Amino acid sequence: MAAERTAEGGRYSSARVHRSRSPRAPRTGLPLRGRTFAGRPRGTGSGAGGGASRTPRAPRGPRGNPLRGLPARLMRAWDRPLTAYYVILGASLLIIVLGLVMVYSASVITALNYGLGGSFFFRKQLGAALLGGLLLVAAARMPVKLHRALSYPLLVVAIITMAAVPLIGVSVNGNRNWINLGFFQVQPSEFGKLALVLWGADLLARKSEKRLLNQWKHMLVPLVPVTFLLLGLIMLGSDMGTAMILTAILFGLLWLAGAPTRMFAGVLGFVGLLGVILVKTSDNRLARFACLGSTDAHAFNDKCQQGVHGLYALASGGFFGSGLGASVEKWGELPEAHTDFIFAVLGEELGLAGTLSVIALFTALGYAGIRVAGRTEDPFVRYAAGAVITWITAQAVINLGAVLGLLPIAGVPLPLFSYGGSSLLPTMFAIGLLIAFARDEPAARAALALRGPGFGRKRFAVRWNTMRRRAPGARPSGER
Image (tube, rainbow, N blue to C red; front, side):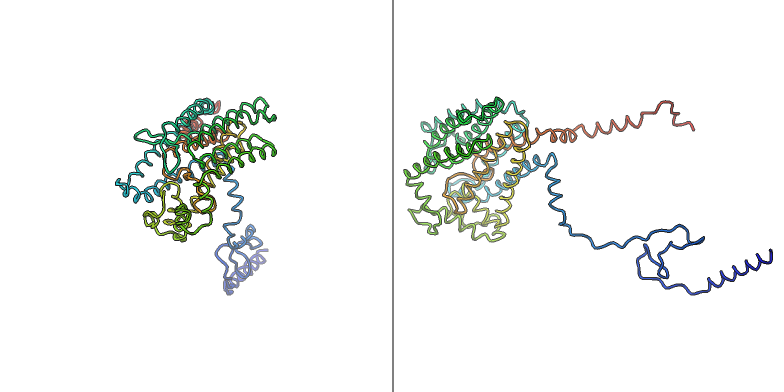
């Protein structure tokens, strides 16, 4: 047996020597992980010396397209509780800041022509923006009940001031809708938009809670008569542009309240007939309609100069514009370059990229407001948010359509962007309403509570107490 073991051991010894002297198998060109020897993966040997079998890793394929699944990721991000809150806040602030830059660029020549400092209009707009920021924060912090309580006093004040315009108002560019306060000129009709939004939303919400909106008389009265009263006071100052925006707010409220199609058709037909009569009885309004599609700046006694030179400014901007401050049309050729036609100066200085950016910001703001109105269970929030978005969107469409030559010039500023404190202040308060409504969603309230100022300290305290808590009967930490 010993001999056999010796012989066997010798045989094994010779076998080991023979294996050690045999040439190595050639390595394959695979990488270190999962590389093979003699065509076999490393670590997959069998028998006593092979050890446990290990499955080789599959080689990594090429990375997928990063755009694959992008719509799904965007939808998941959009469904987050605070998305509408951040979009409304971010888009409105970006529009205001870019508007301040363009107001300074577009108003320098006009201010110098009047013998004022180059930054005169910019400083006034900046002051209005700071005051509007306070109004925005106040509106965003107010509870919904306080918003509803402010609706009736604001409507009464708007009606009284608008009724005083024909008596003590001043005329600007043919429209008598301003009240001169010495250091500041106020346009009461701009605050009439905010009053109609809050009062109309509160009125419809009260009737919705009592289930009265299924009757046409409760749907129309007193909403339509009061709106027509505001429209009549506005038309006494010949401001048809603001009247069009109030009409859009009225239709927005009726649509949100679920008005039937026949009621819409009746109100729309009456308003359309009234609009035709107002246009036919004014040579100025007829000339504005006649200038649509005109390329002659001196046609109709120079009535087409503003529209034609606005198109010149947009056409000369190209894709990326001529640069900030490098506009040519603002040197006297384009009237109201810093107010109604500031979008034309934007197109000339920042080009197509700048104009599309502003349009994208307004689109994001409108879409976020629609989300707030669609997700709430409070009827007042739904009506007010929808009316605010209707107001801002309709005013932006009317202004952009006039600059692009698609609509007659209505004399309304681009909201949050053009020069004018009377337009900026109520619009920023309306943005504060949207922010308050977005914060008032249950999921948004929970998310904001977690991100409060005491969130980090509370979380640390909970963790510290949890770490110090011991199970019953546990030994002290020094014992073993």
